[in-house]
Image (tube, rainbow, N blue to C red; front, top):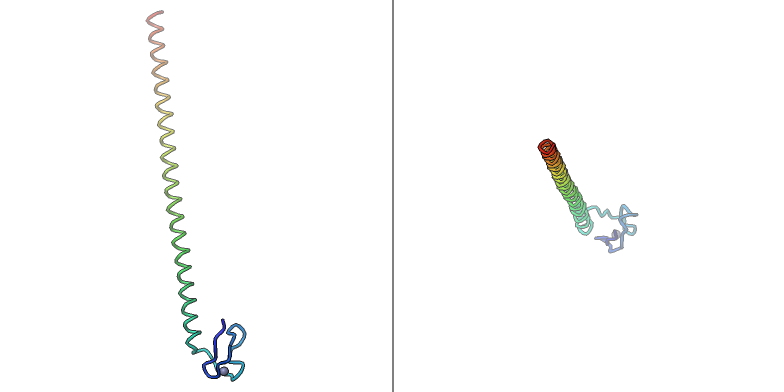
Length: 102
Ligand SMILES: [Zn+2]
């Protein structure tokens, strides 16, 4: 980032210069820089938090999906059982009817 030297007012590029290129003063205590660093740290913390929240949400969605899928499976198994029992009943009735007639 670009800040201004507290001593001589020269613009300093903190990405390139360790001290003021004009008067050689150190800018480590510069308020602008400290504020910017704090802002960046907070930004980093917030994006980290965002990432964590997103992961938790994803897990929740996956859990919900799994639950839904299991319920669907149970529903299908239920239908198959009901179908099989009905078919058995029909066959049983047909055999009984057949033995009565026969
Ligand atoms: Zn300076």
